[in-house]
Image (cartoon, rainbow over all chains, first blue to last red; front, side, top):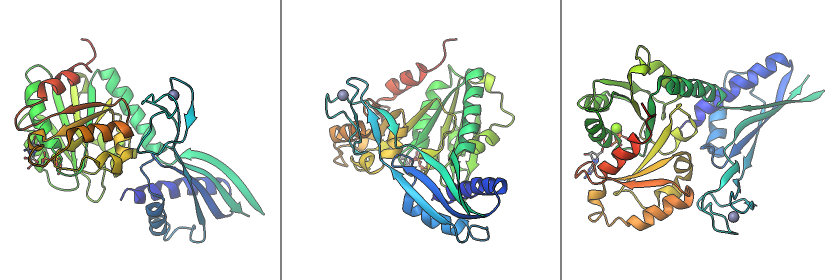
Length: 113
Length: 218
Ligand SMILES: Nc1nc2c(ncn2[C@@H]2O[C@H](COP(=O)(O)OP(=O)(O)OP(=O)(O)O)[C@@H](O)[C@H]2O)c(=O)[nH]1
Ligand SMILES: [Mg+2]
Ligand SMILES: [Zn+2]
Protein backbone atom coordinates (compact mmCIF):
# COMPACT_ATOMS: atom_id res chain seq x y z
CA UNK A 1 0.00 0.00 0.00
CA UNK A 2 1.77 3.12 -1.24
CA UNK A 3 -0.80 5.40 0.41
CA UNK A 4 1.27 5.22 3.58
CA UNK A 5 4.29 6.84 1.95
CA UNK A 6 1.92 9.37 0.40
CA UNK A 7 0.40 10.18 3.79
CA UNK A 8 3.90 10.61 5.20
CA UNK A 9 4.92 13.06 2.45
CA UNK A 10 1.66 14.90 3.04
CA UNK A 11 2.40 15.25 6.73
CA UNK A 12 5.92 16.44 5.95
CA UNK A 13 4.51 19.17 3.72
CA UNK A 14 1.85 20.12 6.27
CA UNK A 15 4.49 20.41 8.97
CA UNK A 16 6.63 22.62 6.72
CA UNK A 17 3.67 24.93 6.31
CA UNK A 18 2.67 24.97 9.95
CA UNK A 19 6.23 25.94 10.89
CA UNK A 20 5.70 29.05 8.76
CA UNK A 21 2.17 29.71 10.04
CA UNK A 22 2.01 29.03 13.76
CA UNK A 23 -1.21 27.68 15.21
CA UNK A 24 -3.19 24.47 15.20
CA UNK A 25 -4.00 22.85 11.88
CA UNK A 26 -7.76 22.51 11.94
CA UNK A 27 -8.14 20.88 8.54
CA UNK A 28 -6.28 20.02 5.35
CA UNK A 29 -7.71 19.98 1.84
CA UNK A 30 -6.39 17.45 -0.61
CA UNK A 31 -7.25 16.74 -4.24
CA UNK A 32 -7.05 13.18 -5.49
CA UNK A 33 -7.54 12.58 -9.21
CA UNK A 34 -9.17 9.36 -10.39
CA UNK A 35 -6.02 8.67 -12.40
CA UNK A 36 -3.59 9.55 -9.60
CA UNK A 37 -3.19 5.95 -8.54
CA UNK A 38 -4.36 6.81 -5.03
CA UNK A 39 -7.44 5.42 -3.39
CA UNK A 40 -9.19 7.89 -1.08
CA UNK A 41 -10.26 5.20 1.36
CA UNK A 42 -6.74 3.81 1.63
CA UNK A 43 -5.34 7.32 2.00
CA UNK A 44 -7.66 7.97 4.97
CA UNK A 45 -6.55 4.76 6.58
CA UNK A 46 -2.88 5.58 6.00
CA UNK A 47 -3.40 9.10 7.32
CA UNK A 48 -4.66 7.68 10.62
CA UNK A 49 -1.51 5.60 10.97
CA UNK A 50 0.87 8.28 9.77
CA UNK A 51 -0.35 11.08 12.00
CA UNK A 52 0.21 9.16 15.20
CA UNK A 53 2.69 11.04 17.38
CA UNK A 54 2.38 14.24 15.33
CA UNK A 55 0.57 17.48 16.20
CA UNK A 56 -2.15 16.62 13.69
CA UNK A 57 -4.20 14.39 15.98
CA UNK A 58 -7.31 16.59 15.70
CA UNK A 59 -6.83 17.68 12.09
CA UNK A 60 -9.65 16.98 9.70
CA UNK A 61 -8.64 15.44 6.35
CA UNK A 62 -10.84 16.65 3.50
CA UNK A 63 -10.38 14.74 0.27
CA UNK A 64 -11.85 16.08 -2.93
CA UNK A 65 -11.91 13.51 -5.63
CA UNK A 66 -11.26 14.92 -9.11
CA UNK A 67 -12.92 13.25 -12.09
CA UNK A 68 -11.20 12.79 -15.40
CA UNK A 69 -11.51 15.73 -17.75
CA UNK A 70 -10.24 15.44 -21.32
CA UNK A 71 -10.18 17.53 -24.48
CA UNK A 72 -10.45 16.08 -27.94
CA UNK A 73 -7.47 17.16 -30.05
CA UNK A 74 -9.56 16.71 -33.21
CA UNK A 75 -12.83 18.53 -32.48
CA UNK A 76 -12.06 20.47 -29.29
CA UNK A 77 -14.89 18.83 -27.38
CA UNK A 78 -14.20 18.52 -23.64
CA UNK A 79 -15.87 15.81 -21.61
CA UNK A 80 -15.53 13.80 -18.40
CA UNK A 81 -15.26 10.20 -19.57
CA UNK A 82 -15.39 7.06 -17.60
CA UNK A 83 -11.74 6.05 -17.03
CA UNK A 84 -12.46 2.75 -18.73
CA UNK A 85 -13.45 4.36 -21.97
CA UNK A 86 -11.80 7.60 -22.84
CA UNK A 87 -12.61 8.25 -26.53
CA UNK A 88 -14.45 11.35 -27.78
CA UNK A 89 -18.22 10.78 -27.86
CA UNK A 90 -18.64 13.44 -30.54
CA UNK A 91 -16.16 12.41 -33.22
CA UNK A 92 -14.89 9.09 -31.74
CA UNK A 93 -11.25 10.18 -31.90
CA UNK A 94 -9.56 7.75 -29.52
CA UNK A 95 -6.63 9.75 -28.13
CA UNK A 96 -7.65 12.55 -25.80
CA UNK A 97 -5.59 15.16 -23.96
CA UNK A 98 -5.96 14.82 -20.22
CA UNK A 99 -6.78 18.15 -18.57
CA UNK A 100 -7.56 16.92 -15.07
CA UNK A 101 -7.72 13.68 -13.13
CA UNK A 102 -4.03 12.98 -12.58
CA UNK A 103 -3.51 15.38 -9.68
CA UNK A 104 -2.47 14.45 -6.19
CA UNK A 105 -2.25 17.75 -4.43
CA UNK A 106 -2.13 19.39 -1.06
CA UNK A 107 -4.40 22.34 -1.76
CA UNK A 108 -4.69 24.25 1.49
CA UNK A 109 -4.69 24.21 5.28
CA UNK A 110 -6.96 25.85 7.79
CA UNK A 111 -4.96 27.09 10.75
CA UNK A 112 -6.42 28.24 14.07
CA UNK A 113 -4.36 30.78 15.92
CA UNK B 1 -9.03 33.13 14.40
CA UNK B 2 -8.96 30.65 11.52
CA UNK B 3 -6.84 31.34 8.47
CA UNK B 4 -6.81 29.54 5.17
CA UNK B 5 -3.29 28.91 3.90
CA UNK B 6 -3.09 28.13 0.18
CA UNK B 7 -0.43 25.53 -0.56
CA UNK B 8 -1.20 23.94 -3.93
CA UNK B 9 1.80 21.63 -3.96
CA UNK B 10 2.01 18.21 -5.51
CA UNK B 11 2.24 15.63 -2.76
CA UNK B 12 4.81 13.63 -4.70
CA UNK B 13 6.80 16.70 -5.72
CA UNK B 14 9.99 15.42 -4.10
CA UNK B 15 9.83 12.33 -6.32
CA UNK B 16 8.85 14.40 -9.36
CA UNK B 17 11.81 16.73 -8.90
CA UNK B 18 14.25 13.86 -8.48
CA UNK B 19 12.78 12.08 -11.50
CA UNK B 20 13.14 15.16 -13.64
CA UNK B 21 16.79 15.38 -12.60
CA UNK B 22 17.29 11.73 -13.56
CA UNK B 23 15.59 12.25 -16.92
CA UNK B 24 17.94 15.15 -17.68
CA UNK B 25 20.94 13.05 -16.69
CA UNK B 26 19.80 10.13 -18.86
CA UNK B 27 19.25 12.40 -21.80
CA UNK B 28 22.62 14.09 -21.46
CA UNK B 29 24.36 10.74 -21.16
CA UNK B 30 22.47 9.48 -24.22
CA UNK B 31 21.09 6.40 -22.49
CA UNK B 32 17.62 5.13 -23.33
CA UNK B 33 15.83 4.18 -20.12
CA UNK B 34 12.87 1.81 -20.27
CA UNK B 35 10.89 0.63 -17.26
CA UNK B 36 8.66 -2.44 -16.97
CA UNK B 37 5.59 -2.82 -14.75
CA UNK B 38 3.09 -5.64 -14.39
CA UNK B 39 1.35 -7.75 -11.81
CA UNK B 40 3.57 -10.33 -10.06
CA UNK B 41 4.64 -13.09 -12.39
CA UNK B 42 3.53 -11.64 -15.73
CA UNK B 43 6.94 -12.39 -17.16
CA UNK B 44 9.04 -9.23 -16.73
CA UNK B 45 12.28 -10.95 -15.79
CA UNK B 46 11.95 -13.71 -18.38
CA UNK B 47 11.21 -11.22 -21.14
CA UNK B 48 14.05 -8.93 -20.10
CA UNK B 49 16.54 -11.75 -19.96
CA UNK B 50 15.64 -12.79 -23.53
CA UNK B 51 15.63 -9.22 -24.75
CA UNK B 52 19.02 -8.45 -23.23
CA UNK B 53 20.54 -11.57 -24.76
CA UNK B 54 19.44 -10.27 -28.15
CA UNK B 55 20.57 -6.70 -27.64
CA UNK B 56 23.86 -7.28 -25.86
CA UNK B 57 26.02 -8.15 -28.90
CA UNK B 58 25.25 -4.74 -30.40
CA UNK B 59 24.53 -2.50 -27.41
CA UNK B 60 25.83 -1.62 -23.98
CA UNK B 61 23.18 -2.53 -21.45
CA UNK B 62 22.51 -2.31 -17.74
CA UNK B 63 19.52 -3.28 -15.65
CA UNK B 64 18.00 -2.48 -12.27
CA UNK B 65 15.45 -4.81 -10.80
CA UNK B 66 13.13 -4.13 -7.91
CA UNK B 67 11.62 -6.77 -5.64
CA UNK B 68 10.32 -6.74 -2.10
CA UNK B 69 12.90 -9.37 -1.19
CA UNK B 70 15.55 -11.72 -2.66
CA UNK B 71 18.23 -11.15 -5.27
CA UNK B 72 16.88 -13.92 -7.50
CA UNK B 73 15.75 -11.75 -10.40
CA UNK B 74 19.08 -9.93 -10.53
CA UNK B 75 20.84 -13.28 -10.59
CA UNK B 76 18.66 -14.36 -13.54
CA UNK B 77 19.28 -11.14 -15.44
CA UNK B 78 23.04 -11.38 -14.82
CA UNK B 79 23.08 -14.29 -17.21
CA UNK B 80 22.30 -11.87 -20.03
CA UNK B 81 24.17 -8.78 -18.96
CA UNK B 82 26.99 -7.98 -16.57
CA UNK B 83 25.77 -4.70 -15.14
CA UNK B 84 22.76 -5.65 -13.03
CA UNK B 85 21.75 -4.38 -9.65
CA UNK B 86 18.94 -5.58 -7.44
CA UNK B 87 16.93 -3.06 -5.45
CA UNK B 88 15.23 -4.75 -2.52
CA UNK B 89 12.48 -2.51 -1.29
CA UNK B 90 11.57 -4.37 1.91
CA UNK B 91 7.97 -3.41 2.58
CA UNK B 92 7.65 -0.82 -0.18
CA UNK B 93 5.51 -1.95 -3.08
CA UNK B 94 7.06 0.19 -5.85
CA UNK B 95 10.33 1.76 -6.96
CA UNK B 96 10.78 5.51 -6.62
CA UNK B 97 13.21 8.00 -8.09
CA UNK B 98 15.36 8.08 -4.96
CA UNK B 99 15.93 4.32 -5.12
CA UNK B 100 16.94 4.58 -8.77
CA UNK B 101 19.31 7.44 -8.06
CA UNK B 102 20.97 5.47 -5.27
CA UNK B 103 21.19 2.25 -7.26
CA UNK B 104 22.98 4.03 -10.11
CA UNK B 105 25.86 5.12 -7.89
CA UNK B 106 29.20 4.45 -9.50
CA UNK B 107 27.81 3.58 -12.95
CA UNK B 108 28.94 5.67 -15.90
CA UNK B 109 25.73 6.39 -17.76
CA UNK B 110 27.69 7.70 -20.75
CA UNK B 111 28.92 4.16 -21.32
CA UNK B 112 25.40 2.77 -21.75
CA UNK B 113 22.92 2.57 -24.61
CA UNK B 114 20.05 1.02 -22.66
CA UNK B 115 19.11 0.95 -19.02
CA UNK B 116 16.20 -1.35 -18.21
CA UNK B 117 14.31 -1.03 -14.95
CA UNK B 118 12.07 -3.84 -13.74
CA UNK B 119 9.62 -2.52 -11.18
CA UNK B 120 8.21 -4.49 -8.27
CA UNK B 121 5.39 -6.77 -9.46
CA UNK B 122 2.37 -4.59 -8.69
CA UNK B 123 -0.25 -2.99 -10.92
CA UNK B 124 -1.33 -0.28 -8.51
CA UNK B 125 1.43 1.34 -6.52
CA UNK B 126 4.07 2.11 -9.20
CA UNK B 127 1.73 4.24 -11.28
CA UNK B 128 2.24 7.58 -9.53
CA UNK B 129 6.03 7.34 -9.24
CA UNK B 130 7.99 8.79 -12.12
CA UNK B 131 11.40 7.11 -12.35
CA UNK B 132 12.79 9.42 -15.01
CA UNK B 133 12.31 6.73 -17.63
CA UNK B 134 11.87 7.59 -21.29
CA UNK B 135 9.34 4.84 -21.90
CA UNK B 136 7.16 2.87 -19.51
CA UNK B 137 6.13 -0.58 -20.65
CA UNK B 138 3.22 -2.41 -19.02
CA UNK B 139 2.98 -6.19 -19.36
CA UNK B 140 -0.17 -8.26 -19.35
CA UNK B 141 0.18 -12.01 -19.66
CA UNK B 142 -2.15 -14.27 -21.60
CA UNK B 143 -2.92 -16.14 -18.39
CA UNK B 144 -4.42 -13.05 -16.77
CA UNK B 145 -7.87 -11.79 -17.69
CA UNK B 146 -8.37 -9.76 -20.87
CA UNK B 147 -10.11 -7.15 -18.74
CA UNK B 148 -7.09 -6.44 -16.49
CA UNK B 149 -6.63 -3.03 -18.15
CA UNK B 150 -10.21 -2.10 -17.24
CA UNK B 151 -9.57 -3.11 -13.64
CA UNK B 152 -6.27 -1.22 -13.42
CA UNK B 153 -6.79 1.73 -15.76
CA UNK B 154 -4.32 4.02 -14.02
CA UNK B 155 -1.21 1.95 -14.64
CA UNK B 156 -2.21 1.34 -18.26
CA UNK B 157 -2.91 5.00 -18.67
CA UNK B 158 0.54 6.04 -17.45
CA UNK B 159 2.35 3.54 -19.70
CA UNK B 160 3.54 4.12 -23.27
CA UNK B 161 3.72 0.58 -24.60
CA UNK B 162 1.79 -2.58 -23.67
CA UNK B 163 3.23 -6.06 -24.11
CA UNK B 164 0.91 -9.05 -24.05
CA UNK B 165 3.27 -11.74 -22.75
CA UNK B 166 3.18 -15.56 -22.69
CA UNK B 167 1.25 -15.47 -25.94
CA UNK B 168 2.27 -19.14 -26.45
CA UNK B 169 -0.25 -19.92 -23.69
CA UNK B 170 -3.11 -17.99 -25.29
CA UNK B 171 -4.94 -20.99 -26.70
CA UNK B 172 -4.58 -23.09 -23.55
CA UNK B 173 -5.80 -20.22 -21.38
CA UNK B 174 -8.62 -19.42 -23.83
CA UNK B 175 -7.26 -15.92 -23.94
CA UNK B 176 -9.25 -13.61 -26.20
CA UNK B 177 -6.56 -11.56 -27.93
CA UNK B 178 -8.95 -9.12 -29.54
CA UNK B 179 -10.74 -8.41 -26.29
CA UNK B 180 -7.39 -7.75 -24.65
CA UNK B 181 -6.39 -5.25 -27.35
CA UNK B 182 -9.79 -3.62 -27.07
CA UNK B 183 -9.60 -3.17 -23.32
CA UNK B 184 -6.06 -1.78 -23.50
CA UNK B 185 -7.06 0.72 -26.16
CA UNK B 186 -10.18 1.81 -24.35
CA UNK B 187 -8.22 2.91 -21.28
CA UNK B 188 -5.23 4.16 -23.25
CA UNK B 189 -6.27 5.02 -26.79
CA UNK B 190 -3.45 4.95 -29.31
CA UNK B 191 -1.14 2.83 -27.16
CA UNK B 192 1.37 0.65 -28.99
CA UNK B 193 0.49 -2.98 -28.22
CA UNK B 194 2.72 -5.96 -29.04
CA UNK B 195 2.25 -9.68 -28.41
CA UNK B 196 5.30 -11.65 -27.31
CA UNK B 197 6.40 -15.00 -26.04
CA UNK B 198 9.72 -15.23 -24.26
CA UNK B 199 9.38 -18.99 -24.62
CA UNK B 200 8.90 -19.35 -28.39
CA UNK B 201 10.41 -16.01 -29.37
CA UNK B 202 7.22 -14.88 -31.10
CA UNK B 203 7.07 -11.10 -31.36
CA UNK B 204 10.60 -10.65 -30.04
CA UNK B 205 11.98 -9.26 -33.33
CA UNK B 206 9.32 -6.61 -33.40
CA UNK B 207 9.82 -5.62 -29.76
CA UNK B 208 13.57 -5.47 -30.21
CA UNK B 209 13.13 -3.24 -33.26
CA UNK B 210 10.76 -0.97 -31.37
CA UNK B 211 13.25 -0.45 -28.56
CA UNK B 212 16.16 0.08 -30.95
CA UNK B 213 14.15 2.75 -32.74
CA UNK B 214 14.12 4.71 -29.48
CA UNK B 215 17.90 5.04 -29.38
CA UNK B 216 19.25 8.47 -30.16
CA UNK B 217 21.04 8.43 -33.53
CA UNK B 218 24.75 7.83 -32.91
N1 LIG C 1 4.85 -20.24 -21.26
C1 LIG C 1 5.49 -19.11 -20.93
N2 LIG C 1 5.85 -18.89 -19.65
C2 LIG C 1 6.49 -17.74 -19.34
C3 LIG C 1 6.80 -16.76 -20.33
N3 LIG C 1 7.41 -15.73 -19.73
C4 LIG C 1 7.50 -16.04 -18.41
N4 LIG C 1 6.96 -17.26 -18.17
C5 LIG C 1 6.88 -17.94 -16.87
O1 LIG C 1 6.14 -17.15 -15.96
C6 LIG C 1 6.67 -17.25 -14.63
C7 LIG C 1 6.94 -15.86 -14.07
O2 LIG C 1 7.89 -15.20 -14.90
P1 LIG C 1 8.83 -14.04 -14.38
O3 LIG C 1 9.63 -13.60 -15.54
O4 LIG C 1 9.57 -14.43 -13.16
O5 LIG C 1 7.77 -12.93 -13.98
P2 LIG C 1 8.02 -11.50 -13.30
O6 LIG C 1 7.02 -10.60 -13.88
O7 LIG C 1 9.44 -11.10 -13.41
O8 LIG C 1 7.68 -11.82 -11.78
P3 LIG C 1 7.93 -10.88 -10.49
O9 LIG C 1 9.25 -10.21 -10.66
O10 LIG C 1 7.89 -11.83 -9.35
O11 LIG C 1 6.79 -9.90 -10.47
C8 LIG C 1 7.92 -18.09 -14.75
O12 LIG C 1 7.58 -19.39 -14.35
C9 LIG C 1 8.25 -18.06 -16.23
O13 LIG C 1 8.90 -19.21 -16.69
C10 LIG C 1 6.39 -17.03 -21.68
O14 LIG C 1 6.58 -16.24 -22.62
N5 LIG C 1 5.74 -18.20 -21.92
MG1 LIG D 1 10.79 -10.44 -11.94
ZN1 LIG E 1 -13.76 14.80 -30.83
